[in-house]
Amino acid sequence: MRNQALEDNNMTDVQTRTDAELTDEPNRPGTASTRRVVLLGAGGLGAACVLAACGTGTTSTNSNGSDFSDNPAPAGSAGADSDGTGNTATGGSALALAADVPEGGGIIKGEYVITQPVAGTYKAFSKVCTHAGCDVNKVDAGEISCPCHNSKFSIETGQPTSGPATKALPETKVKKDGDNIVAA
Image (tube, rainbow, N blue to C red; front, side, top):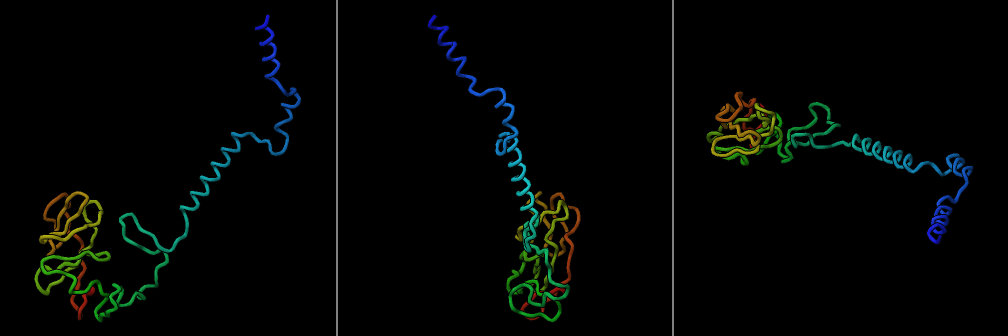
């Protein structure tokens, strides 16, 4: 008997509102479904993140790591000291200081690999590997190396010396002008 009384008390404690109160609740202001509120909030947050990622910044980094500007200067306005050295060149845009390019080696600067295979002879090649489009990352022992698949290229001709690459790095004609290596 005592168990029956406890069960009766428990049964009556479960329902504390009338059916009319339960059916009117969705129509009251400020009582939207919790699930609906959470989903709408999550959707709004997601949309805000997407829009923020599509921002209109003026500089960024592209997929191969080099900087670019989506608001470039007009053509021809970069000036001869575009390498930031403050030196000017008369033959073209300065790509590097000649003193920075070691004999029998080279440097990677801007979009180029600039080499000095023999004293006083300068070459410039694209830094983009012809195999898979990765940027080369090292000039050592007379070779330009690509880290992606270990292709190697000659510092004198840009021709592949090993690896999966079969095409030479595109060459840009350069010359020494004063203290600078400039596009010819």
